[in-house]
Length: 381
Image (cartoon, rainbow, N blue to C red; front, side, top):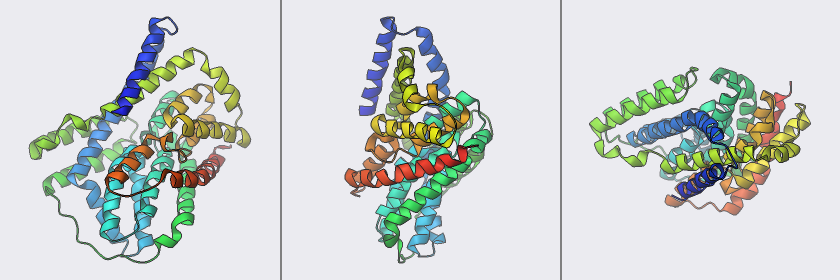
């Protein structure tokens, strides 16, 4: 609800700027044309993820991974890393933070393991693995749209950087938690699905959706189709689950407010100041400067407005990629740097897992620059 209020305030500010002739209605239309497919994708993929979770898809996947771990804590943690990367890459970082986190907490608690190494893996990888595909993060969708990149062209540009970001994240996590990953855990019976038919259908829909998200068609099309299929199946099998709360109204209003407010700021001349900070050039030091600008901005004001503010002065693809690294992989320090981090902490509190923000910030101060700066290196041609 707080997000929706902030979004409404930002929309009101943008409307006031237009009404007082500080900005033109045409500027708002340009923003609207750019963001409606992105917001529609956010709604559709959130519905898909929520209904897949309700059907037990994530629970079943987590249990299968725990069996692959064969009773070794380190192996189970590695499986959680793989699941977090896959969920983030294809279903977005917010899905990992909101839906995967409680599943992982339940899995490790049932096996009497310390949850901290596992939940830090989910939130850090939700941010750093969000460099993999356009659909992994709203910022990626904006960048891919600006550069007219297909999913495969996006992977060609940022794939090596995403790989380094993930490996570096895992390395820092191991550095912090290696002692807690020793030992073994007992085997647990598989969770019983409340509706096996619903589980199978939801699993099939998710499996079919994943390759379609990298097929080259606009992501909102397969995501919307998958959402409609699941809504129809749930209306048949479990109608009480079909409710308006499935639609992330607060997130959509918040994102829309940011888009329009930052768009208006651009027309008022914010680019000159940001450009003087971000610099220019595609050599390593110049790219690091831009990444650092994105990293600091994201941790000050949140990664989405940080990206929107710096995007107009980023320049060629290599620089835009460096900006994405800063605002995505660099969003590990402050709680508000990424909405996913705030949602992650809310879920942990609801499940009775305590993680202090002091600890989060101190660990992030080491991880964010290491991961971000390392990920920039492949961009130097």
